[in-house]
Length: 458
View 1 (spheres, helix red, strand yellow):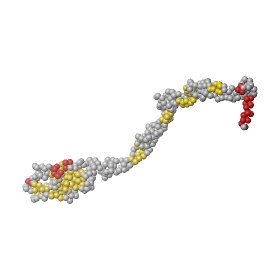
View 2 (cartoon, helix red, strand yellow; view 1 turned 180 degrees about the vertical axis):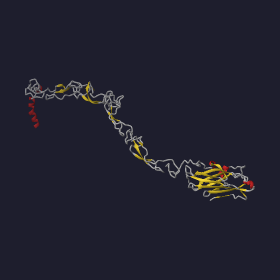
View 3 (cartoon, rainbow, N blue to C red; view 1 turned 135 degrees about the vertical axis):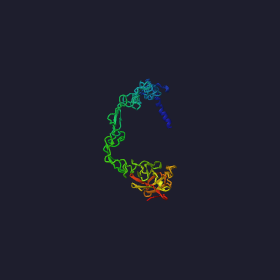
View 4 (cartoon, helix red, strand yellow; view 1 turned 180 degrees about the horizontal axis):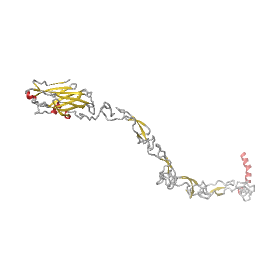
């Protein structure tokens, strides 16, 4: 019931609001105050919403936006409130980029666009033109020249063809060994080392002064000594005594002052030549000092001995190397004519030979007597072989340096001998002094009876 009453109450008002050109009510238009934004000519003056502050009439459309550059128009529709709505469907301006297009639709293409750029030589900036980046302001590599600059931007200055150093640079030159000191060498305008070492101290000839003058790392090399140094010189062996040498200018040793030097060895029981051996290699220029150690080397003594003769043999019991010495002598003993035998036909003869060392030169000396040619003259024996053999039948040995030999012979038959005498020291010692051995040949006389062939020693 309330709804029905409301309907009838509102209905007359509705008919009263119909616009003048709206004849749907079938009645005449009644002007009213213009209502803005209802799309009706309320005041029936033929103009809809006149008097209202509106941009457009509802339902109208128009182009919107911009069609400059990359932009394109869109469409705006007028709303019921008489204002233009959102611009739809157009292409809007964007940030300008380097592509040859007016992206921000300001009528200029790629304007005021820059960016950082670089080369091997460093950083710079470049601009956009016609859609491309160009004109980078960074330095560009060039061919390397000798100017103290890295022209080709490879990180090395002045490393071009036929260049060995960077212009104006320096390097250490020379040596700092010994007394030498290094200097400085400059890189010249051709980018080569100048070859001149400025400020260096160079090597000089070694001066034997305790310093390394020639800078080879060795002090006084080539020098025997350092001047004013001293050293013991000479020898203190045997009769020698040491002295003192002083190093002279030039690094050589001076003379040996105060020494007792070696001299030629003499036979005095002293080590004169200071070789550590007494009386060795003495030159004995005396009779019997030649080498006569064997029967073949026996020293032949002359003249021959005969009855009633006495001879003295001298020699030295010595060898230069101090080894045991043996002296062998050879002497001929011949019998005289047996005239007495003509009177005493058929008698025998007694031959007596005495050998005695009369000076042993301080040594215990003995000797052997080897009587060769014990046969008659018409049958000579091999005398050298008999000496070598030293057969007991032909050999008499001394005791205490003495032997007396008595041999039986026949009258009218000559008894001639080649006697070898072998002298030696029983102790193996040596002496440079002369020893003496005396040989005595006694007279042989006829003897009525037998001759006692024997020998005596004492």
